[in-house]
Image (cartoon, rainbow, N blue to C red; front, top):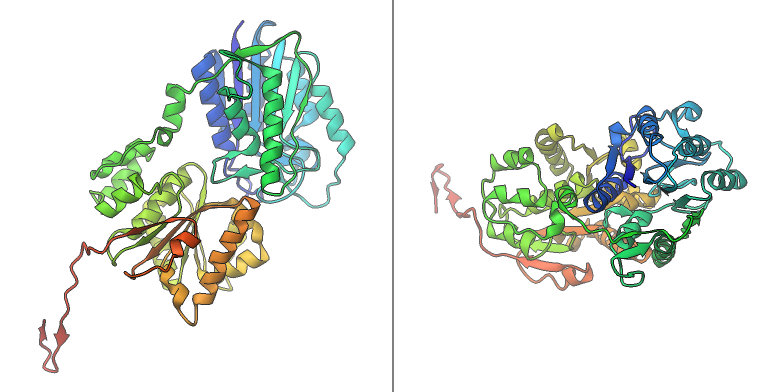
Length: 488
């Protein structure tokens, strides 16, 4: 008997008409790493551009050469359509019939796999909505009986299929946690939680039932409906070992080992930052200062913690936001930077495109009435730069955009006390707090150059205050005389 696995995760799509996801690629990477570390065997990972219709079909052809005693696991995380197809990287939304993988085709491919035990996990949905793993197109009727029948045809004796949601429900993903709900709890269950831990091995059907219950509870906590289903049976009791993360998992998620940053900026490699990105930073800041070190090691800005940083101008506060945003972008968690002035947005746009563009990190802006906000609405970005007013207007008319976001950086948060513009910022912060009731809680990093009493702002935002009074760049006061001379 041998283990064989195929893990597919797609966040980015070739068609500009298809919304980007945040967590599908991480879902596939994590499951691939966990199974590979624990069970070995033959495993394959198809992510983003590799997960084309032809590429997926070719890997199913390889699985068709399995032996009858093999165990095969196939996991898909990405968009599903309202007409019951799996969306591949190269799907054409105007030609779904020939550029997607219909459930009927998936069933035919699975029928060719002779393995006596086959598990299929579909972390996608067949309903609409941004923030969920669905491709929503107009004019396609939903056929609930059809999708149920197709799923039942795939499952059966020796073939079990775990679906993320019902035929009219969404399959939610959490940008902050970095996984879809189904995959998040599947990863937990595979590692033997106390509720189902039977020693060194776990009953697979019991594990899947546990995952389904956990997803229902998690969705209920954010006032959502998501009911996974388990179809099919295995012949006899089927167990496998408790899975343990190993070197493949550690290489894929280095930040989960709680590394520690040092003054040398090269130490950021332990957090999963690529060497090329670190080299780009080193040209401007060869060393991390005490403010930045405390923010990383003590305040958890790279672990998703909320922080209000109050420090003088030129103390390195903005770098805190960049660190969190880029770390998130590497994990497909989007970031929003909110700034008080268009000039600041334009300046940051030029900087971010110059520094991070070469690494495939896409930065966009939205500041005025004439901006094309389509990429923002479809989630086709890594970092978005907006003024307070623009974000407030977009959030009111398109509230789902907060479902895309993993990190929010708010510059000049002391503007909340400004008579003319403070109301907009206060509305934004209040909206963020209210959205937490729905389970939407992006990491919040706020900066202030004003040194003084914050009047509990950090507690109101659910974060911690990181305060520094030392000024790395000296501030010299002087005056110009009418004669043109300059003196202190």
